[in-house]
Length: 493
Ligand code: NAD
Image (cartoon, rainbow, N blue to C red):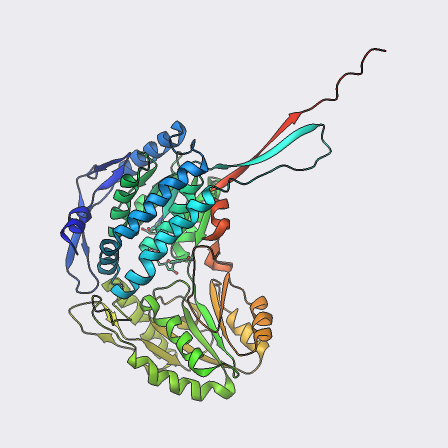
C-alpha cells in the first residue's frame, strides 16, 4: 500500500462533503486476510452518524445541486469520476487487494477497470433522459417523465467492494439521487478512496455520504431512516430477507441482490478442455467468494469419471499464494471467521457421506486465511453443502442421465442467481437455459460480465437487477402529467 493510500485509509466518515470522525470517536482496525495483520483503521460510525449522513443527503437532494442538473451535466461529473478511477487505478487495486485478500492480478485487470467502465456507461445513460408521450383518447396532452427517487441507502458486501458499490452508486447518481453508502465492515478501504474521488470530481457536497461501521446497527438504521427513500442491498440471503421485510413494512422501495449456489451442467458432448476451464473458473474465482460461482458441478454420467479425473488433476495446479504475486489465482478467504465457516461446511459434508477428492485443508501461509480448492463427490442432493451457499472454493459433484434430470437438479435449491451449461450443441444450450431458474446463464464459459449486461436473482437470490438500463430504472420513478386540452367553444353563428 502506498503512503498516500494509507493516509486516506486511516479513514474517516464522509458526510456532507467533509471528512469526520465518528461521533463516538471510536476507530476500528482493518486487517489484511493475507497475513491477519493490521493495515489501516477507519472511523466506526454510530447511528447518530447515519442520521447526519441521511440529513446531509436529503438536504443535497432537496437543494437540486445534483437532482436538478440535466443528465448531460451529471454525465460530465461521472466521466471525471471514471477518469480519476483510472488515474488512481493502482492505489485502488492495492487497497482492494489488501483489504479483501484478492490477488492483485484480479484487482488490476477486473475490479478497477470494471468500476471505471461502470461510471462511463452510466454517464452515457444519464444523457438518454427517457420519457414517453402516448396516444390516448383523453382530451388532453400528456407525457410521462422519469425522476430520481430521492435518497438511496446503499448496503454492499465484502467480496467485490468496489464493483458492487459502483453498480449501485453509478446508476443512482446518473438518475439524480443522493446516497448514503455503507460498505461491509471487513472491507471499507476502497470506499474511502472512492469518496475522495467523488469530491475531487466535483460531485456536490452531501450527494455521496460514506458510513463505515457495524452491519446490523448501522444497516438497520439506514433501512428504516425516514429521510432515506429507497434501499439497494447486496449481501447474504439471511440479512437481505430482514432488509426486505423491514422495507416492506415501511413500504419503501428495495432491491436485494442475494446469495447464490449455481449449478454448472456439463453434457457429454462438451469440449472437455473448455468445460474444465469453465468449471475451475466457476468455483475458484475470488476464492469462491463469488455470488455467481458455479459450485454444483452436474456431469452427464458417461463423461463423469473421465471429467472428474481430468479436473482433479488440474485443480491442484491452480496457483494459490501471496496476493501481491501476479501469478496468484487463489488468495485467502476474507476473515478467520469465514475460513472457519467454509471449513465447517467441508467437515459436515464428510459426515454426510461426501468424499473429498481434492483439497479439504487449510493452507498455512504467512498467517493468512487460506483454504485449498476442494472437490467433494458422493453427496446426496439434500446435503447441506449442495443446498446451501458455502461461499468458498468448494465444488460438489453430482451425475445425471437426461437433460430433464440435469434441469431438475440445477433448479433444486432455493437459490437462482447464475448457472452454466457446457455443451457443443447450441440448440440444447438455448433449450436448457430457458428452463433454468436463474438471472444469468453462461454457455461454454464462466464469469464474463459487463456493466451493460443485466444480472440479478430469482427465488432466494433476491429481486432487482444490476447493470444495464434496468438498474438505472430502479433508481427512478415515473410521473405522468395530463394537461387538459378542451375543445374550443363553438363559435356563435
Ligand atoms: P452480509 O449480508 O453479511 O452483509 C451485506 C451488507 O449488509 C454489509 O454492508 C453489512 O454490513 C450489512 N448488514 C449486516 N447486517 C445488516 C442488517 N441487519 N441490516 C442491514 N444491513 C446489514 O453479506 P456479506 O457477507 O458481506 O457478503 C456475502 C454475501 O453477499 C453472499 O451471500 C453473496 O452471495 C452475496 N452477494 C450477492 C451478490 C449478488 O449480486 N446477488 C453479489 C455479491 C455478494
